Length: 515
Image (cartoon, rainbow, N blue to C red; front, side):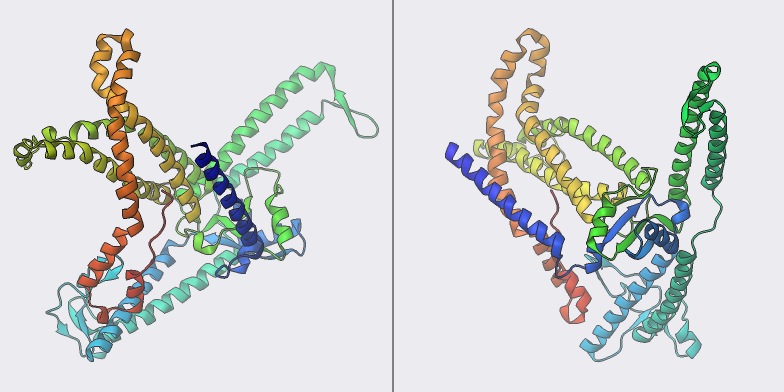
């Protein structure tokens, strides 16, 4: 046993050393698929309103690091442009599908405008209702057909794609002009900032009257007669200005979140050399520690661009809320385990409508022992397998985390804590649940009662480990979900009518979740 333990620790240490070498090589040389600009860039959060333009952000960093800045960019919140771009992407997919149909059948396909389509695992079907509709012949009707008209699919989606390309190009020019010039809208936080600066000047003048100065200009003390009053004023002004600073910062967060400012508080700054990148990442960039927080920029493929424009304080608030709810769920995990152990038995299931046949099968002791032994384990493993998917949805859609690696890190941490809670509860919850009445009747004998009841759960715990090792892990390695998805798509869709984009979706790699 000792030899096995030391051998495992030795293998883990060697693996960590190998990982460290690979990590250092990646940070210094990058990857073949990695954009070289990523290594020279910083991700900047909490950008103040006055610096929210490419030009202003570039000038600010160029002042701190003269001649070292390559470019600066502000992340834009452009839901209108994203909506049009999504329509264009859909038009491209349908045009490709129409061309694939023409190549497979040798004739041009038609469809009725406005008919619904179904999407299965990223692959879209042809219109569900293919009959009906009047074929358009007039040139004006072909250019802008009405709902219910039958049109040539290739011509229709080509015209639609042309119109959407023009709309996207126009909106891109508009957004590019905005990001270059900056946003000149008047906001409440700007007014509070001006009041804050004015009050600071008044406080400085008030405190300066009570200072004693020598001819050199050095402050040597305060007037004794006004020492207490000046101290009170200083405390009052500090408290008052702290409230103003807090309101100013939170108004920025509320305005960015509610009104949806086009120029967000997130940006990227690219340097000319890596030494300047490291120096900027480790140095304070402003007198206010709550603004211009920087970190090494992640790979563009790692960024979830739908969340990139959100204010970091808004995301942290949601993260705090999610941690409270998930932690509360871990505390109540014993309720889930105890309920499974109480209900996943033949006697309980026989009372459920539609499962009366289990009462007849209960005559067989082999069937009863098999169900009572493995059904709770399978039910618990099924619930545990859903946890990574739930944590992923929470991290991406509720907490609005900005990188995929951050999401996976949160999944792995939370899944680990739930596994610890599951191991603890598996051993203790059932015994406490079954022995609760006896403990309430004899509270002085609680340790004796628990000592007799806990060993009875060893069989359940061993069954859980054996099932997880011999059944759960092989199923994960077989990737049955990916196999079933591919089988379903190949049965439902004919490959000759599918585009290369759809084939790539069928055979895409399954993501490796942190759980």
